[in-house]
Image 1 (tube, rainbow, N blue to C red):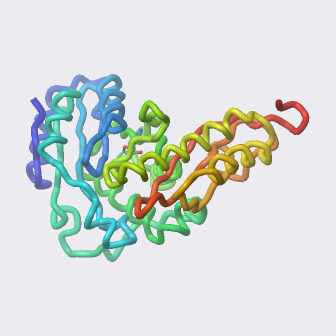
Image 2 (cartoon, rainbow, N blue to C red):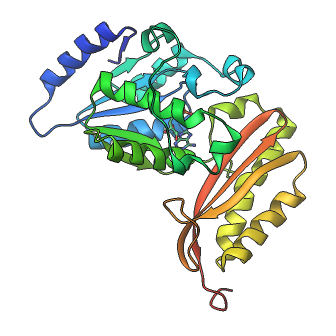
Image 3 (cartoon, rainbow, N blue to C red):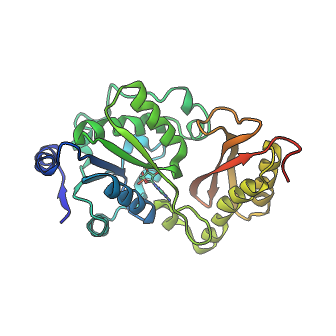
Length: 287
Ligand code: AMP
């Protein structure tokens, strides 16, 4: 049975009961989400279930990480359906706090600053976003006290920043990454996909198609970017914000070897992001 708790006091009591069931080597896993759950979130629950004796999911649409009020207002919210999915995927405890529970004094005066890793990609396009993410994740970690926390590669820069947060602030949590879950046509699952009209949904395929074209080019950086750009250039109604190559830790890409190709675009009024691992080949050794 999945238990739903709303307040910090209820969470603390439920967490103690869960902890009593754990043996000395058992771990407690946390999956932070903003709800409107889809198969991507479910993959995180399954990974947590496989790695941990107890699984807690949080569902909280965090106002501090939204830079636009309209984006926050129209973010999908469906707690009843979410709870049923948590139940099906063996989540022991769902913490769904309201805003006052997380921000009892209104906007915080002290917060986590994301630093240099956030000065690129998503950061400049979404001012304050990562400070909001890292601050709320810090609050979630403090309240739930998990041994492990599960995050999706779908939000790759976020994943890197959370690893940095844990290292820099010495948080006693192991961060686990889960590969991106995609629709059959390649589109990365996202809670925002439901906001796409049928024709926008069709156009949105271009993001993953571009990333796969880049990956399949398997050449040097210029060839990978050119292959991906060619797909995006053909797409109708896709307004690209960035298409960038980095090394796996988001430093400038190497001449050859493992790298990450990342894209952000607006399709209609919906902003989508995606990324994929690529293997760069030195000039001359690619296809
Ligand atoms: P969100 O509810 O959008 O804040 O996402 C909660 C967690 O689910 C984050 O760690 C995301 O990276 C992860 N996630 C979102 N979409 C996917 C996906 N398509 N595949 C894997 N993980 C995902």
